[in-house]
Image (cartoon, rainbow, N blue to C red; front, side, top):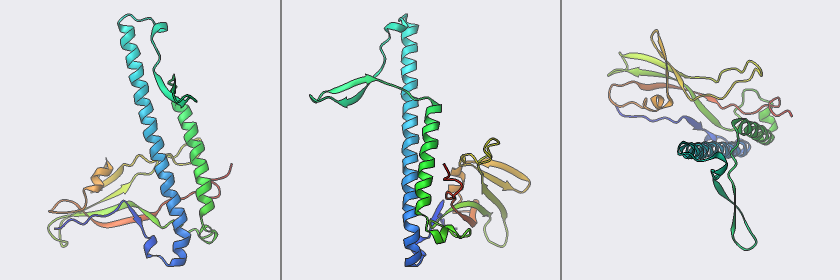
Length: 223
């Protein structure tokens, strides 16, 4: 059996009429920009955590060798350039998780407001309409066997984020999936889903279930 790949996200904008495409493209493009910004922030946060850990490890090594805390130099980083062209060096300042979370929450809220403002009013009033033209993979039915007349069938469903008891809203998803294999239910990583493109007699995707991605509502963008 030959491999048949499938996307985690399905962009159907190119299949829409010119009129609908003009309504969907601004929202779709803005959504991609927001995702790119979130990825950049996540990478920057990881870099800072790593740098902070390296700095703490360096100080711990110096203390272990008998250095006085007051005499341990603080790591310096490049700041703004001076008028003479030299670069000013400043003490490295590391943000706390709470500070990062607060900044991220404010950034997400601002992005949601901007994204919501781009949704065409006629689409916004239609609860069943896809407002950006992008669908995400949420479930699969797989088949294992040499022919469609026999074999073994299983299914996968993407996990939703847990509901926050304080706010009632869902938390971020962790990217994992539930695998339903007869009476056995187990948790698998996204890499498992990527391996279901077929080839040979291994499990391969037979039915793909997509859902329009969630976009902010009027309630979400309230200050």
